[in-house]
Length: 325
Ligand SMILES: Nc1ncnc2c1ncn2[C@@H]1O[C@H](COP(=O)(O)OP(=O)(O)O)[C@@H](O)[C@H]1O
Ligand SMILES: [Mg+2]
Ligand SMILES: [Zn+2]
Image (cartoon, rainbow, N blue to C red; front, side):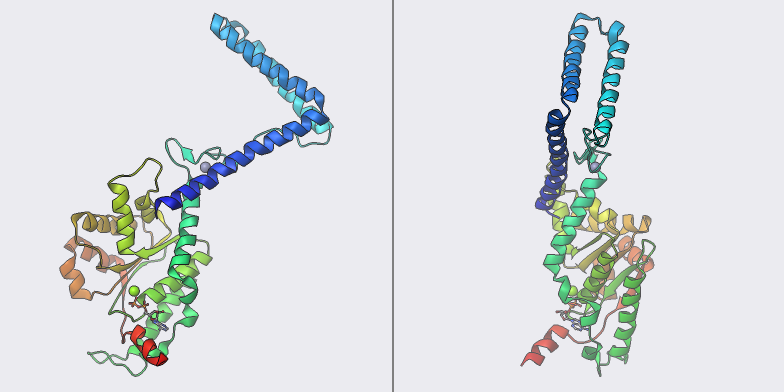
């Protein structure tokens, strides 16, 4: 998630606010023309607020406050009655923000309002869809024929293994909910891990859940950049990763082995397991490589908390290239 996503989301929220204000101003112009009495009442309200200011300056506001407030309220009620009498809705001159929690400012108590977060997620998802070519990776274009007649070193039929994995993935996508388990896909390059991850991402997105998909390198890169120099109004990628309905991290093991990366990966896996949020991780590593590369606390979380699927077969990218010739 880069800064542009944040900027775009923030601009959209502020545009809603500007539109709400512009709408009321247009209504006001219209009403002043059609109901001049209301223009007069508004002018008297302005005079009253100037009077309040003067009284406050003279230290006499307290004695008069109640009377002035009452007059103001009466004036507002009168406006509403006049609107209704002339066939307008009584709230025709009220501001109507899209988000009533933050009045379309995007901020609430110094942090992001949900409406801004939702917008960030929505734009992030659009970007992801463009980048990951979701249209090319769905269950319909996943063929078991590439695994036909291939046998693993320990004698298992690849087509059979992959049929089970495909069935598991389609069922997962079909029945996805926040209670769904986390999954770990491992196995060699080019056997369909990314393809099935994206097929799941697409199906789950279509159900209306928020999904973040990216390679672990790009995800950690964003988190690290923000960690070491985040402007106040920049995206908080880490908190999005920790809260998305479904997070898919592709190519675990390709990231640099820095202490920042190790602790961030642990934080993400651990926090999402604790919150019981589903995560899908894929890796070209085998079991032993994962065990050697990662600290025991990560390995135990992964293998105990995730449903593991071992993908098998020959590199389909190569097979496809051969087909073409
Ligand atoms: N079963 C399959 N049917 C059709 N295309 C596949 C299948 N598995 C993989 N592919 C294609 O082969 C290429 C490599 O697959 P990918 O999912 O990226 O492998 P991995 O992530 O396991 O390294 C991609 O273009 C993908 O769409
Ligand atoms: Mg892949
Ligand atoms: Zn809001």
